[in-house]
View 1: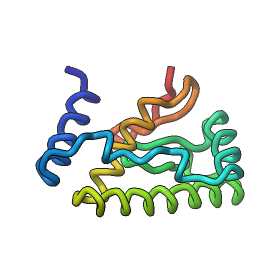
View 2 (view 1 turned 30 degrees about the horizontal axis):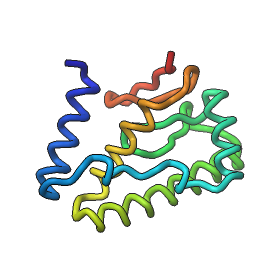
View 3 (view 1 turned 90 degrees about the vertical axis):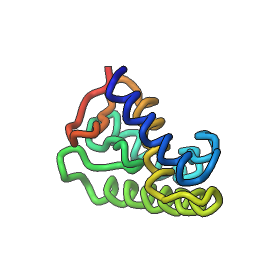
View 4 (view 1 turned 60 degrees about the vertical axis):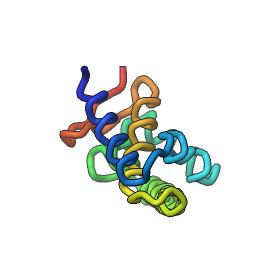
Length: 129
């Protein structure tokens, strides 16, 4: 069993334990609803350049800690929108926000394109191959 499978299983168990029987799909938030087209365009370019990456926590982060104000603003906009969606979904399903964020983060990290950066649980950035 891979570390990814173990982490996903643990988060799923917490979600199910906290909410009774809830399907994982009901807890995840579609990425498209958490961004404007302009912010998405900026972040897609920043991801392709390795400046911004996805984390298992369900949020975007700067890979090296610095970027242009345009990138930082777009990243913050998307993260704020994501948190709002995670909060709404968590309330609907009666689970903690972090559970929804982590489940969505696991999916988004798993769906990252080759060349993009993702932060694994140990806090280490990896380039998707």
